[in-house]
Length: 117
Image (cartoon, rainbow, N blue to C red; front, side, top):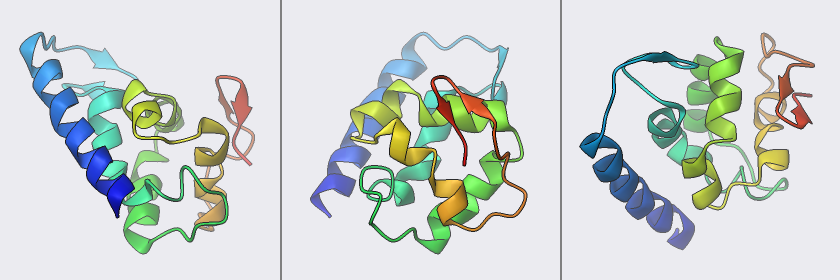
């Protein structure tokens, strides 16, 4: 629970900072958003992204499934500064789609130095 609270506080801070110099552009996650903003939606995944033995909640899987429809966005979110600052380990985070048993996950998709299993 303490980790989730840290994550939410961090998220609030990043949202504040991001809002100061916001530029509308079409990045990996589409127009009007950024991987850091999308990372906030993965708050239910905080423990699963830092501990490969942690169970993955249904709410986490639902968010990952939505983001997984755009693999480049999913990867950008998992490798984002917000995810890293929350304590997420990218090597563990990329295993979440498989741990959620998402049949349509982008198997073999390269996320920086990582590959989605």
